[in-house]
Picture (cartoon, rainbow, N blue to C red):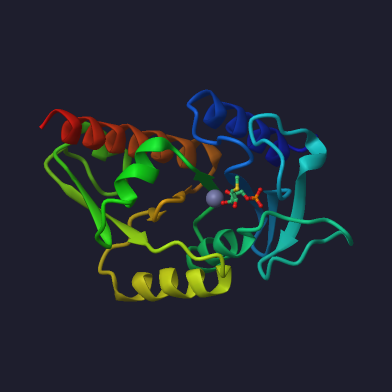
Length: 200
Ligand SMILES: CSC[C@@H](O)[C@@H](O)C(=O)COP(=O)(O)O
Ligand SMILES: [Zn+2]
């Protein structure tokens, strides 16, 4: 088994332990070379991945082996890898906090004052704010990716993550450990935001 496949299987298990990939939700990928990624096959439980559940596609989402069916959301992974040459791993999950908070409305969620903000590039202090974009869900993945790309073009500073309303979160990093760290930091802060609204 390749290192990339092993990293994807281990990350899927870790996301499952947190309850972030219910049913067949979620998809995971790693960049193998500038134009090639390893990504999870569509369907199946991401906490129970086997080596054959990780396949290869190019940055147009085309499988390298005939008959392979990559994630239905491969286009969103490719969009991240195309726009950010430094991105080496992408994670997508469907946690309760992401799903609930993204359904409250608005096109962004702001996170301020958390120590865990330091998990993000260029933030050496809790005394900061990050703005996580929220996009309306869309089963048309090219159209959804176009909306994401448009927001990236308009943004002054792009946070390595975004939410899709009532659906889930996308996070990326230079490699799988970095992507996992950011996902865990974001999920923690979003869970705090939800808890705070509950008791307010
Ligand atoms: C349980 S349905 C979830 C899917 O529609 C999708 O959002 C998802 O995250 C997983 O799709 P997949 O094609 O397995 O990568
Ligand atoms: Zn999804």
